[in-house]
Length: 208
Image 1 (cartoon, one colour):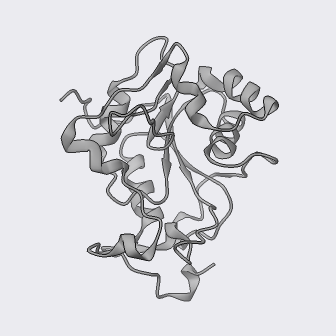
Image 2: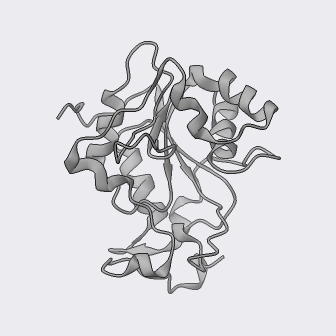
């Protein structure tokens, strides 16, 4: 398995997307608690070990420990991951991005390192095909700053689904090594939490 050394990559920042309706879960997923940390705190900690800066895209209450992070609002009129990814690219056009969801509790540093190792000149994005069935993952993915004009065109034309990118030259869709694939699992319902150590927040300051 190819990885990079676990050191800071100065031209790549991390972006955590929050603010989904969480209708199926019933509470904001980024505030679920696991091993003493909210999922938001855990995600930021993992990203922060590899990138120079982490930002939050989207609306929603954050734990007090994360209130100092830069935040960007989703691009008005857009929905889904494109709204947050494009907001980050507009706000900080000089950097590239590791973009993750707030509901991927099995994410780990090795998966992030693998994404960074997939970078090379001319690569616009790395959107993993985890199952090997042609369905790419737009989150826990890498987006080079040079992809912004393509995303702007998608936003203007109303084509909001990120999987439209997978057929473009420069967009890599590799399948992660088997030991890494669980990192892309996300949690959507209370049933999904069965067998997990995650639980709902118990302190008022984390509710919202």
